[in-house]
Amino acid sequence: MIDLQNLIDGRRCMALSGSTFEKHAPATGTLLAHVPASNARDVDLAVKSAHAALRHGPWASAGAAARARWLHRLADLVERETDALTALLADEQGRPQVEMRMMDVPMSVDTLRYFAGWADKLEGRVIPTDGFMGRPTLNYTQRVPVGVAAQIIPWNAPLMIAVWKLAPALAAGCTVVIKPSEDAPLAVARLGELISEAGIPDGVVNIVHGLGAEVGPALVAHPLVNKISFTGSTEVGRTIACEAARTFKRVTLELGGKAAQIVFADADLEQVVPALAMGMFVNQGQTCAAGSRVLVHRSIAQAVEARLVDAARAIRVGPPSDTTSRMGALINQRHLARVRAHIDVALAEGAIRLAGDEAVPDSGWFMRPTILGGVQPGMRIAREEVFGPVGMVIPFDTEDEAVDMANDTLFGLSASLWTRDIAIAHRVAQRLDVGAVAINCWSPLDARLPWGGTKHSGIGRDLSRAALDSYLEEKVVTAAL
Ligand code: NAD
Image 1: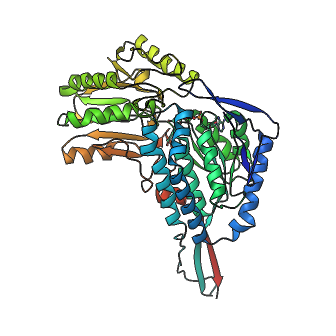
Image 2 (image 1 turned 135 degrees about the vertical axis):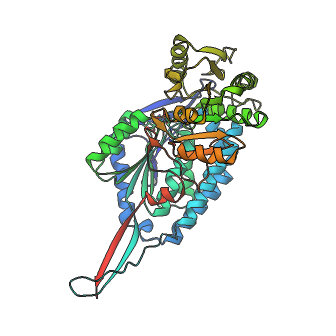
Image 3 (image 1 turned 90 degrees about the vertical axis):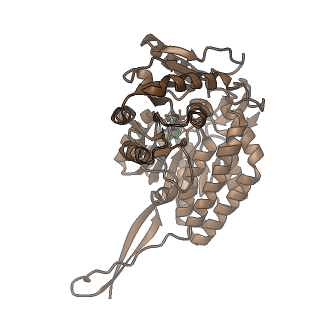
């Protein structure tokens, strides 16, 4: 059991109120940590520390190359701690270690190195004009940090998403206040210790733990916060967008999804079905890009559904401590109940459970990977984000119908499509109203590729040059000569 602490101005501290809450392991119910239950007073201290570090001291006076060195040092430390971070993530998320070892930790390291590379390449422009009031001018721009960034993190990939936000902000020269999810605070707290070990100056990165409804709004409303980067539910994203507008804060919102995986008649099922199952079930289906809606050409729909049912039944569900587990527990009891309620609504609307009612481990918040048959495009299960291990196959007859069905959702984060026909692949990719399309693969995340959605999936992009730009303002300087 760990007593977590906030990181404010380089010091580890309890919430000023002394209050804590408990974090339990999803797979076993064991108490993992007491977590500071911070409030607006803790947020105020953290934001003022970030604001001071932006204006004065070693970070403010450091050169761009120094910021790159700090980021590289942090990347080395995260890489060194691969085993420990993997174990923390597995405990707090209830998720098989193999996923974090393959994805979350290496991608965190790569993302830090990618943005370290950008830190000393933030060049401005020299812009010729006709001059001003008869005098020639020299006009140039500078890329300057947007200021203090508040970064609000979800529980489904806590380390990786914290790094997605932290790395471009630090490369740009911003200072930050991170609010980890109350459901997954451990790995981000360890990241805070590594930030101190990397020598990143005090106050540049602050971490304030607490409940979303307490810490989140205090951060969003704080007058010294210039930018908010949020990943989480569309509901909370909407409240943040409204509140941020009052003080004209810049916002990046990475919200929910309802990804389609479109399978055309010529697809190679040997290759496709395992990838479809991965897109549905990785991280217990608790990913924003979860490909829960499999749209299949009618000629092969039954074959795909039967193979997906077999694939779902073959997945070994168990705790992260069992290295043969390929699916873990859901994050908490409330979320498990919510996912089950989605299934109940689908069954009441006429769906049939084809896989998913087999036994699960006695303790912990487990459920079996579930495939529903007989789902119609208008049913709630086909339209709302479930964020759990639940998938469905819906047949289509024509390319137009597939595209219309894929786009017929409020969300627009990502989609994948499967075909050997290069013309169909690129034609359909262009018609899908989403931020990311994967052809013959599922959701290939990379630090160099922009990640974010259209419609109710959010505003702006994480990762890539686009994320860096979102932490910079372009300032113009005009000198009359
Ligand atoms: P959530 O919205 O419940 O919480 C996200 C974070 O916001 C947490 O840190 C929480 O404490 C905080 N929060 C809660 N209420 C707040 C408020 N009123 N003001 C400010 N902050 C508040 O989401 P979650 O359950 O942690 O994550 C699941 C959701 O995240 C899903 O909808 C999923 O699709 C989405 N997600 C999106 C992406 C993406 O890149 N688009 C990636 C991962 C997850």
